[in-house]
Amino acid sequence: MRLFSGDGASSGEKDNSASHGEITSRQRMTLLAIAAGVLVVIALFTLVATSGGTPLTRCTRIIIQSQRSSCLFELANTTGNATVCLHISGSGEGGCIANVALQQNNVSLCSLSGNATFAACVSALGEKERNPSYCSSLQDPYESICTYAALQAGNFSNVGECSLILNGSVRDNCTYRSYYNLAVSSRSGAYCSYLPTTFNSSLINFILSSSTQLFGIANASLTISSLNTSPQSYCYYNLAHLTSNISLCSMTTGQLKMICSGQLSTPSTQQNVTFNISVGQVGTLCANVPVGVQNECDYGIYSYIAVANRNASVCGLIPTGALQYSCYAAIAGRYKNVTYCSYIGNATDRILCNSQALGVNSTT
Image 1 (spheres, rainbow, N blue to C red):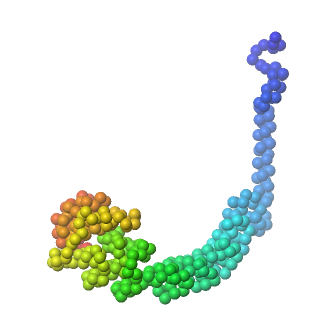
Image 2: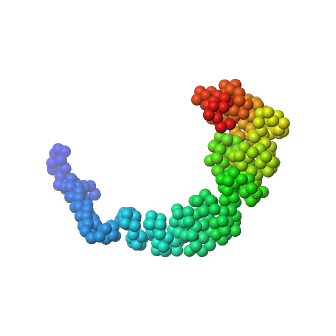
């Protein structure tokens, strides 16, 4: 029998509830008060720990490691004092020292780093200053890598400096790039003769990148010449276009030789050039080019065939609209005939095509 009626629970029932782990309102209030007190204590401790003393002391007093490291890194960066970095634990120390060394252009600061980061610190400074002399304090292979990076930052402008590279393969890569740049800057095909006569993927891609800057992304010279050709042949090809000198095409080899002659022929002589690339060969010819320039390769060969055969329908096979328009414009510009511009759907591009065909503001 119940002693009390109604909804209220007896004191015995309250005790039983507490014994089963239920928290009463009073207990919740007590816990919240304790938690708030702990937070206040932590906040006060942090405030006291990070106030007063030098900036370095304030950073080192920070309990949380990531925040302490950030504080020290920022302090080293703003004061230019690399020794502050020595208080950073873990891999962050080397990055901090390298950052200050770069900021101060002081390679001697790299010696504060451990062996694991010393070479990276020196290489970063040599690359930033484009100065291979920084690399002399390193042992190979790090010295060769460092020197190459420094000369690369200077766009391989001095072929003589490539001799500083100890590793033969790395030295050759530097030398070839320097000779290609000399050929372009001097407009002299004589330097092309120093380049390899066999396919070299790394060097071909370097010349391909250079061609993008020289001729623009939508130029046939950018992509056709990245097919299975040699760096030497590719160099002569680009020089022929840069100097509008068709005689340099004779120095190229294979299909590139024929393409070069066809592209630089004038309308009056073009019918005398033998064209033997068919539309059906495009897929095979472009199969091995870098993935990023696949569309441009298709454009390059299709537009070559279209211009060579004065056949605008070939341009319609190009899947990319902008490159398709460039193909029509190439025919119009070569033959000075605005009729081919009518195939271009975009009004702005059509106007540019008309200007090119009429020789107004045209570089064709």
